[in-house]
Amino acid sequence: MARINPLAFLSDELNTLKEQGTYFKLRVLDDEQAPVCHFDGRKVINLASNNYLGLTTHPKLREAALEATRKYGVGSGAVRTIAGTMKLHMELEEKIARFKGVEACVVFQSGFTANAGTVSAILGKDDYIISDELNHASIIDGCRLSRAKILVFRHKDVAHAEEQLASVANLPGKKLLISDGVFSMDGDIGPLPGLCAAAEKYGAIMMVDDAHASGVLGRNGRGTIDHFGVHGRVDIQVGTLSKAIGALGGYVCGTRDFIEYLYHRARPFLFSTSHPPSVAATCIAAFDVLENEPELIERLWSNTRFFKKELGLLGFNIGGVTTPASETPITPIIIGDGRATMDFSKALFEQGVMGTGIAFPTVPEGKARVRTIVTATHTEAELSQALEILGRVGKSMGLIG
Ligand SMILES: *Cc1c(COP(=O)(O)O)cnc(C)c1O
Image (cartoon, rainbow, N blue to C red):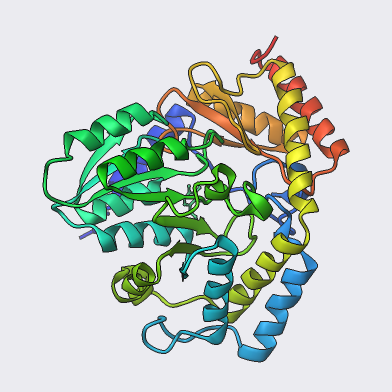
């Protein structure tokens, strides 16, 4: 008897995506992650990566990875708590803690596991989480894993966050107030001073996810806590090593006891193998670069100012009226309809610009967009050419006048 495929329903789901125009094939990078590179054999100006400072190909990071591989091999061989803690892992954690000006730091395999592992380790079902509606999926998953009650506040609305805190103030259980430092799909910055004040007023734990702020905002890229000068007021700082830092990983910063607790209880730390030595060494070298080559961050911001201004002049909706305006190198071109967004992205690609279309469920229904990110390593000529293509394709598709 022919076996009936129990996964056949997934093909139906994919067909629905195809009908909606939001089905995609993965674009495959042929060469290095660089400002101009080849995807699927086509040369494009790359406005889609999180490689803010160009560190994915920085010679010092490349050399650090090679040297660590020669010295220590390619893998760590175990989870951190069994036999997989190498000197390089400890050195990286100490380096990040010093850089951030905190007591201690723990490195996870990714920013995703850092968020999910931390929230679920410190809270339980009798606790409360007060969370911005646009917080990253890894925060949302961490909240769900913790089984705490989740109260969502309107995006960047401090008064609403405070209302939510007040509504549970007299109930037993811990309270955690949590926000992205920079929101990944809109590029706007979380209102940290107001949120810190609200957390302090209600005795809540304050947590910030600085994935898109690390290496981008604050002195030498120290993030939003440094940008706003709210040192000592954020109990839990999360960052990623996968974006501006150029490699892979996530980290959590805070007090020594908090970090030691995560060593004992954070499940991705306990149950998933630690980074290969090459990754740890790469990240150590990246923090040296942040400290010693501030011109990279300066170039990132001058490119950002140039590109944002010109993109706005072309007449695209880059946020600001019904959606937040970006204040960082992330600039969304908001189209609205999922299919129109994917068509726009595809046409841009054919004309030589890589700008990924992002639709539901990554962003809310009706808020689909092509997200652009400029980096320190784009030349002004490359950005001008990208703008010319964006304008031409936008006009031909009737997206701008
Ligand atoms: C990208 C991102 C993460 C996940 O980081 P990875 O290191 O890629 O797993 C977490 N939070 C936010 C806000 C992000 O943008």
